Structure formats: structure tokens, C-alpha cells
Amino acid sequence: AYQNAYDVNTDSNERLSITRFTAKDTTLEIQEISITRRNRNVEMMEIKTRKRSIWVDRDQVLSYLPGKGYNLRIAEDYVWSSPRITEIMATLKRQQYKP
Image (cartoon, rainbow, N blue to C red; front, side, top):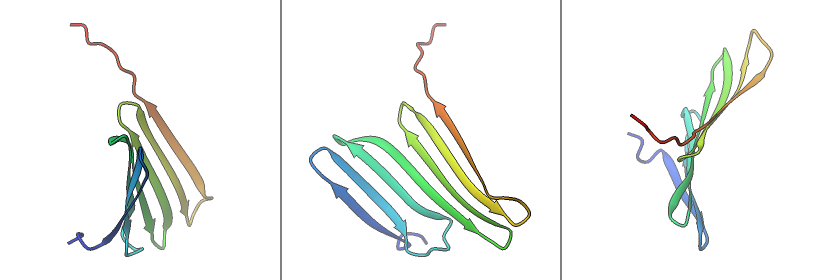
């Protein structure tokens, strides 16, 4: 169903590459997925979503840095309130498991 819904584009140089899957249809909720690789290792994955309705305009960006953390940014504007931006960040800490 979605295999032709996205354009795929890769920008790269010797060490860094970014592959983007961009929605052809601006009404799809998932507008873009991007994968950043450095020296062939995934450095970051990002998903951009958009929701438009008579009640709300919402844009979200979810970023994941493997082994490091997450970031979620939500910009929303409901008809009954003022626009607001919420951002949540989580850092992953490596701890050794001791039974």
C-alpha cells in the first residue's frame, strides 16, 4: 500500500550518508523518515509526522540516537488554546548489570 508513497533520496560523502524517505502525499501522517549513517553505522534515525484537522495542527519529530538517547518535539495548535511546543529528551546511560 505504501511502497510507492515515498520518494527515496540519499546524500553521502566518504564517511556520512543520509537517506530520506519523503511522503509524496502531504496528507500522510508520516511525512519523512531519515537515517543518518557515519562510517556505515547508524548514528541517528528521525521520523517526522504531521496531523492536520479542523481541531488541531500538530507536527512531531522523534529522533533516536542508538545507544545515546531519544528526543521528541511536538508543536501543536488546538483551536481552543494557544500554540505550544513540548520537548522531551531521554539520555541512555550504560550500566553494568550486577546480579
